[in-house]
Length: 115
Length: 108
Image (cartoon, rainbow over all chains, first blue to last red; front, side, top):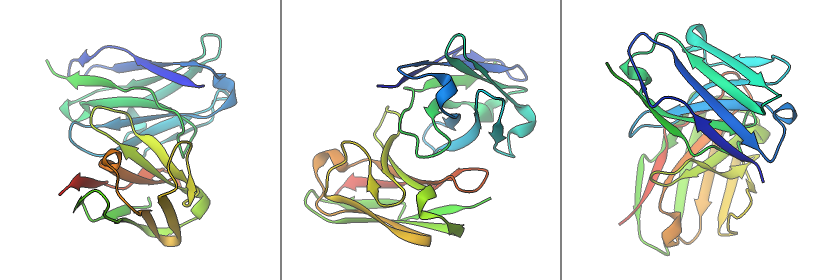
């Protein structure tokens, strides 16, 4: 059974970079696309981006200029960097398997952007 | 970008009632690229339906999905207590993948 676990700071200052890692167990990161999705408190789901270990990526155009994705097959992890954050980036961030119909999700990690 | 509009925003029903949730797309979506998720408070979303009409693992038979093109429906024939949650549709056939705004099914 595939399990995903997000990790990273829960508090980030405005204008700094949000960095999160998703550790995968029960599957190889080389076997699937991996997606980041976020959910502001009390709101709906927003797609951020997805990546494959070969470097193939897709981004939400609204976030593309600030997002970097990476996959580390040696650690079976994939990562998200979101630059120049503002309070509007405060959300629960989820990692998920696949580039749609995500059958496995991490539990989510709340990231608050505040000074 | 394909915009998904879910209606109603909130559905107030009683256990045993029938729930009909709508997801309308601004452009045609292949039914193989349409999914539904269930989310309960404090939990990650759970894949509920894929390919528009295929139940994900563990989803009971009282749940069904249908639709094609721009109109998709999730139906729960007889609501059980565990069905009260928020439901999201998602399309992933066109970049960027998008989610609907969600329908909350609450106890009346």
